[in-house]
Image (cartoon, rainbow, N blue to C red; front, side, top):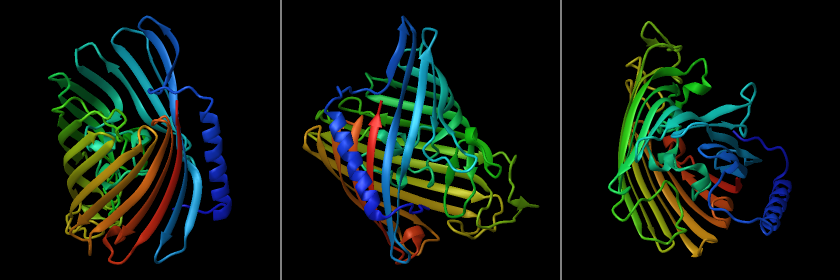
Length: 396
């Protein structure tokens, strides 16, 4: 829920002043393709600092409610990375953009890596489970201001979890893969499939273990997890991924004697997911397609609420996103269409998005605008909402 703190007119004035300041400042900045600044380096020893700042304006206009808007830090996320020994490095990143109540800071990436095996990385700590191409694509490299259903941790994507993660490549990076085995938390809510990291724990999170993996094939050469076509080199990728999560029964706070005490937030026993995705980059055109399928079960098999019917939820998400660089490396128009369906929905929940991106220094400094039209929110027929996003991003 976003709460208006000032008039829409005043917010828009501030927003355009910010855009103007960003444009003027960009004239005096030298561009760099990679984020992060090495503040110390001596052989294999180094310290790097960096981060992202995303200032966002968001307006909601539901058909059955009042219009609301807000301007806020969508992400305010610094990081520190470093190494004191050859083939080893560590990184931690924290989030300050959505501080509420006692939750002033949340941990994002927090891990150390061993890089001593050719074409492989061994990561121990809080890192991404290799599921969902869009979810694995950093928020700073997205075409639309907000992720679609297929990349959202609120609708099945596991996000970062605490454990062991292995990634690698072969065939000159034409085949890439990832595997994770980790402790993973789940925020019980009948209307969502919401994964959370155990690093930022809450008293009611279900605790359990997740095992996941993916394989991506890049026949024309490696296509990284990033949207937008700056290189204008023909690239294509096809990926499949899957995971399974099981509750270890250590923290089922809304179940007593096998019966759910709160059917709006029932404890979840297991979740499995499957993904197939593809992406294309060609002469300024960027296209991403993805389909996710999830099956979840509650601890109490009689729960019928939200996504669950007789203790079971089957959720499917798919999305298509496309962008074209009208002015190479500078101005891109984007569009997207996404859908979510469940057995308990009256109608499919759909969203259509249109937008534009202005790149000052590629993804490092950019201005984005997206207009999103949602129909049948949460599967409720004729419950519609339009949203407008403007976001300014600075990555260093």
